[in-house]
Picture 1 (spheres, rainbow, N blue to C red):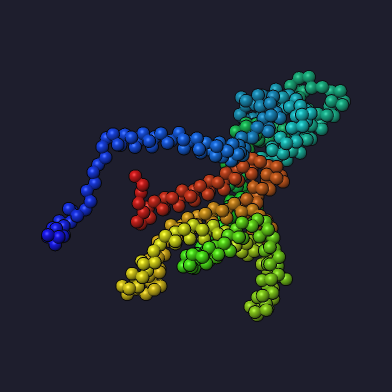
Picture 2 (picture 1 turned 90 degrees about the horizontal axis):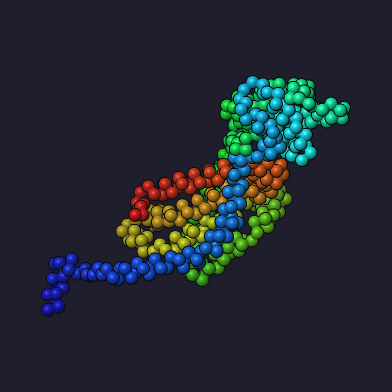
Length: 435
């Protein structure tokens, strides 16, 4: 009887499959109500973190980014001039604009905003700072001599006497453009462009344009570091995944201990190890690898070495999580079917680790793009990355507009890279799209 039943199931494979009974409508409604009822509780749980991120992370970033396109410094210093030039477009401005300019220069100097506005204008046209300060001294001399400016024509005459450049339309166009708080000057400067006196966007000379090559250098160094991290991290992670669990924990701890150490401390250690008299050169010369010490510090070699050392855990951790989930039976099956061990590893095992490699490489690359301390301490003048100049304009020259524009440039480049990765991951062979 049992053999008859078995034969019947073998001849009818569909009958051997388990039968699933669809849920009734009340059960579905109860399950849906339970799921929807958990949403407010989950929202309350994540609300403190969301508020914290919005206040202390997102808001400061958005506030900084707005400085790339919003600069009211000149408008605050020259309010009357802004109103006088509101209807002016070309040629010589009316005498009322000269009178407003004279009043604004004196008021801005007394309020302490003239110097900042002059520095801002000097970024658009070289010599504007000297022009404004010379005009201010001339107005001071008139005040001391008891010659007040009674009419707009008097103001026009004295402003032109202070400097003949006030008779040029290009000078007034620069002033009128900078008076508008909404500006594209910083964004254009970040991509090595500017507006000329006629308002056309032109490329800066090769001697003045620097930030696009610096961005390319940043991507190139990050790409080299990512390639080395993948080349070193993959065999290390594979070795870790093959260890027994106890030894694997000990080896993983040895990798993570430097990861928990301060980046500044690790870079300072490389400053001791990499010099000509350092440990690396001494070992290499004792092994007769080099006849003379090799320059490994204050150049790109030292920067890449330190960045690879710092970023290797970012590759090992996501890749190890993927390798742990791969069963060794796949390789054994390929070898048992006649495949060479290396062929089984390359054609069976490696493709399964592709998601971990991609995630780790993307994490390493994006982290390398924002590095500042390693190039600043271990690199030379030609090895600084874009983050170095963002820090310089933020802390040293106090040019927050250009710092924000460079930050936006780096952010957009990183976002474009991430979107490209997502697109390639979606359309790669064998990828499944979510419904």
